[in-house]
Every structure is written in structure tokens, then in C-alpha cells.
Length: 475
Ligand SMILES: *[C@@H]1O[C@H](CO)[C@@H](O)[C@H](O)[C@H]1NC(C)=O
Ligand SMILES: *[C@@H]1O[C@H](CO)[C@@H](O)[C@H](O)[C@H]1NC(C)=O
Ligand SMILES: *[C@@H]1O[C@H](CO)[C@@H](O)[C@H](O)[C@H]1NC(C)=O
Image (cartoon, rainbow, N blue to C red; front, side, top):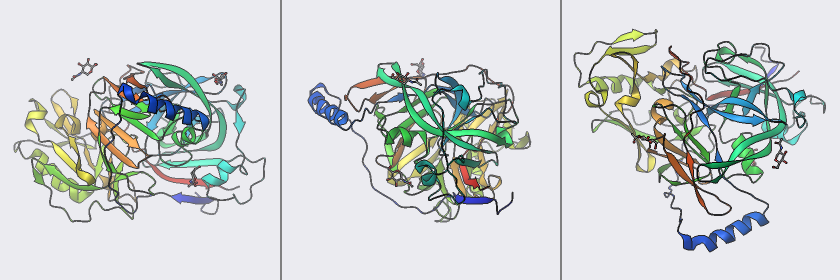
């Protein structure tokens, strides 16, 4: 790419760490608190805010031998059409394949129907021009050479080198707002999203796990979450429970009352959901690592990302972890499968033959990763190790610790941006959670979904869809 034509607006890598103490959530749900809730509801109405919870239907399966990703269904435009987009907490905008797109996938092996977004096919579609506030805010200032009739461009490169570029449009997003136990009502809100005109890498070619686009659940103002929060529709709190046993799971925006989760602070002012990993424990042994191995800054740090399939560790960590993980099985012979996975034959129950790996975070929050999560069954009695070295990951992210679906599945993971904390707890993702309706204080059950039962019989895409850089084309 020509560097003169390419203005890098934000090269987003991992940086600095800072710590804040926090408390667990305790939400009073007793009846006698009703009056307090009523006051809050009144206040909310007076401020013109109608905060409610949102239930996003999930599909997919994070296992590398399945789809390797999770997706949700959204409505866009008027009348609304359905779009299936990958759920990615590592990036910041929603974009969908648009009519202009030449290399976009037209069909998908996931058993879903793909749709190209056509601004002309929606009565409410509006082009965002480069002189509009959203555009200058996204680019941190006015855009050189902007004339009012020119569109506001977007361009994103993801961690695996795949990219999307196009322009921003504004239209109605239709979603399910929670209004009862396992019950939702359709709501809509005008939002700004990317109309994808040029895709490359895995986003362009294959039909294997093709989707209509990606919904970034990052912290930036451009994310759907931030836009819904800015228009008073939701609080900036969401949670996911990714079910790699049955597929799909739970994805909800709103305060979670049940299960209770312990949390760790999010490192402020970071482009991703960065947390402070203190150490790694295997069978009560703590890996002996240099004290700065997990420090943030200069492309390092620990990132939580639902858009990444596996988990990536700095070389030095990987090299200590793997022998410890295999220590109880001295006779195992490792061999390479599909040129990328270390695999072995094993016929017993992996949870009995291998240890739990505990990742310990700031504020005493730990993430237990069970053998059935970090080992995946390739076929028959062949098991493969899900942990990866981060060296092959990206040129710049060499020492980054990237925690994807491999370690996040089968847990309720809560992202609370109001309090800048993140937390999780082991959970049955085929069950349900309880969320509190902010306007009324009423608690509702949100259940699991599984959009598509289609499964694949090959190694899925190993995705690393965290935002690597956003760029913008001038002229
Ligand atoms: C948005 O919701 C309003 C109120 O329910 C409804 O009248 C309108 O038709 C909806 N618009 C779209 C595009 O669905
Ligand atoms: C994001 O939006 C908030 C509230 O609208 C604003 O205060 C803040 O400056 C914005 N942040 C950036 C980076 O534009
Ligand atoms: C998880 O929840 C589902 C739905 O309630 C239930 O059918 C299943 O047995 C549960 N699984 C476990 C391991 O408890």
C-alpha cells in the first residue's frame, strides 16, 4: 500500500497497565426495593433514557474443529433485513458486506443465508459524509481534503491480516430487547455502521465460515454498544457465555444479577479489553517467568477477545507451560496436524490425565482452564493442544497474550464498562442468566440460543480478529 495515500490514524497495539481496586456486583432484587426502583425508573424517563437489556441470539461454536467462531443475527434497514455477523470483542465497529462488494462471499457453509446491504434498498439509509461529527470524532479531527458530499471512509485490518474497507452509513438497527422471562420485543435504534466495499484475506474468499460482517463490541465510541448507550438505550455492560459443547450460547447487554461474578480491573485507555495477568499455575506450581513477561506496553499485555479462536502466549510462557501440561503423560508422542497443531493419541478422559491451568489476575480473580477446554479432539483418539505461541500471531504483537474462545468458552464473561472491570465464572452456557431492567428494576431471565446447527467437518478458521489497526484512505 502507498504510505502517502494511507493515513494511519490509530495504530492500535497493547500499552500501559494501571490498576484500580473494585468490588463485586451486588444487585438488590428484593420486592421491598421496588419503590427505589420506581424512583430510578422515573428518573430514567425524565432524562429521556429507556435503558433496557438486549438479548442477542448466538450461533456457532468456538472449537477449532467446528466453526471456530460465534455469530449473531441483527436486523438492518427499513424494512429490516437479517444479517449474520461475527461477535468480536476485539474490534470497534459493526460492518456488513455491501452491494458494491466484488469479492464478498455470496454463500456460507454455516447453513445461513447471506445478504448484501443495499443503501438504496432501505428507506431509512443515510450516507455519513466526511464533514459530519461522527466522522471527525472517529478520525480525531477534521479530515484533510474533505468536501461535504464525500463519504466517510473506514478501513480495518484484523490480527490475522484480513481486512475490510468501505464507508459509513446510518440506518436502523433492529434488535431484541428483554421484556419478560425468556421473552423479548423488537426494538430499533438508528446507528452508524460500515458498508463494506472491499474485503481481503479470510473475509473475502472462503465460503466455509462466511458471514455478512463483524460486530465489534469494543470500548470505542464507534461501537454499536457505545452508540446504543449514547442514545440512552442501554448501559455499557454486556456479557457472553460461549457454548462450545452445544454451540451458540448467551449474549446479553445489561446488568447481570445471576450468576454473580468476581472481577478484575480493565486497564484504562487501551484499545482492547486488557487485563493484568499476574501468573500461571499448573498443578499448584507457579510457572517461573520473568517478572515483566505479562506487562502491558509496546505491543505486550493480556487481551480478552471473543473474536479469537485459540489462546496465544509469549514463547517463554508457552515453552514452560507445555511440558508442565504434559508432565503426567511421559510416554506421549507429539506430532503436527494440519501443519499447525501439536497433537497426540490419548484414549482416556483428558480431565483425569491432564492438569487444570489457572491464569491468575489482578484482584485475585483466576481463570481455570480445564483440559477439555485447552485440548480439543481432532478425531477419534487424536487430541491437539489449543495453546499457541504468540510469535506467529502478528509482526508487532510478539509478546502479546491473547485469550480467545479456547479459554472463554463455557464461562459467563461480564464486561462492565461503567465500572471498568471484567469478570467471569464457570457456567453452563446452555442454561440462562438473570439480568436487571434498568428502567424498572425488574429482573428477567435471558436464555441460551443456537442459531444454526450446521457444523463443519474440517479444521475451521483459526481467527484472530482483534483490531490491529484502523486506517483511512485519502483521495
Ligand atoms: C422502529 O420502531 C418504531 C416504534 O416501534 C416503529 O414505528 C418503526 O417502524 C421501526 N422502524 C423500523 C425501521 O423498524
Ligand atoms: C466518546 O463519547 C463521549 C461521550 O459522548 C465523549 O465524552 C468522549 O470524548 C468521546 N471519546 C472520544 C475518544 O471521542
Ligand atoms: C446445562 O443446562 C441445560 C439446560 O438447562 C441442561 O439441559 C443441561 O443438562 C445442563 N448441563 C449440565 C452439565 O448441567
